[in-house]
Image 1 (cartoon, rainbow, N blue to C red):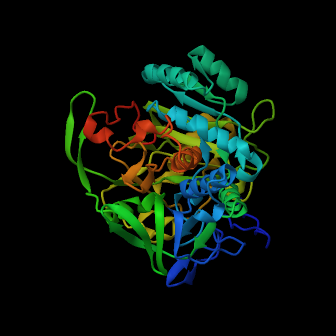
Image 2: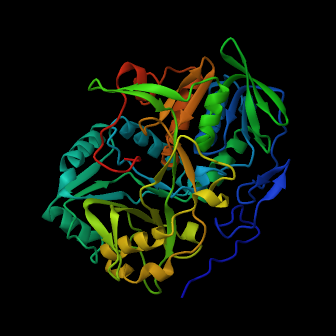
Length: 487
């Protein structure tokens, strides 16, 4: 039996992705009815102090926090901030994200970013849809040194986590999920502040925050370039007119390389590493396509813990373990990598959402149309078999779950930086770029940190390790013991 998701009520702003009607057309461009807000939006003004480009996680968080800080400090008002997006809030990767809020990063400076992000998630967990259930990561013995370093760094940064090894790891996993297969589970890192957020609620909540603080939300105009003078951005050019600005914030997600080019930046660079290596003529941007999907829970089965609580988000990477389906088919060129969280909000019925390692496309990609609408970048045919095989291997309760995979389009593309680590930096004297390398949804706090700086504060320490100069100065990141660019 395959359940059908319930139809949304007329009061719901968002349709479950995959159940929504096809996009309408406005100004010759597709408009996703899942992300057009119920409330009226502003007309495009002639100018503003701050223009924020992109109504994804970073654009909305930055716009909201800018308006909040300007109002509370007396330095301005919410209407000094203009937020522009051609299709509405959450129309890019933010609206498709799995919604995991976690700190499993081998790039240690990211641990402080997530500490600050969880503060924002917890500032209004109801309207942001944040569920602080924790995050459990499972690995094999070959990652022990990485897990030890992760555990130490997280706790040093004020992000509490526990580390379990060997039999202690098995005992901990069984205490949460008695039917968990611990055969290859040599290590467990338990992040206590982590969890997940419903993507639809998070988008709605941020859009409401922007509206409440007076941000001029301009949904419909398409940014087509920048007017420059002496290296500065003097106006943001759109298909409905230009908007003069003092400062522009670019949170363009998968469209970041396009904006980078409009600012006159090159598409190649040399990367210098701490060990002296130099990678010549490396692509500034590399596209990867996502592999994610949903599985309905079997009738009478839940994804709760032994003490009847909402399960932590689960991440498992077994680098020496193949994935084998229940009928004995093996994926010879892939190792075991999966993540999962409870996602009734996304599935439309009791179910889980998750995925595996994204697939590299290269330096060029067609991002239009985006996501599920793009025929080129849908999840591969093997993904459903692979993902359900990982579930069946890990949990007795998910044996035979392949027939419950939610068969629908699953597509998304992200633009990654040269070292797969975000860039938060000035890319022109008055142009602040948030290029999250597709790590963005969980990093809601980057908008708060950016706004603090943009309203006159010093560059926060948390943002300093993510400047562009690392590539030329010899501290390019890299070398993590994982095959996934997100770790």
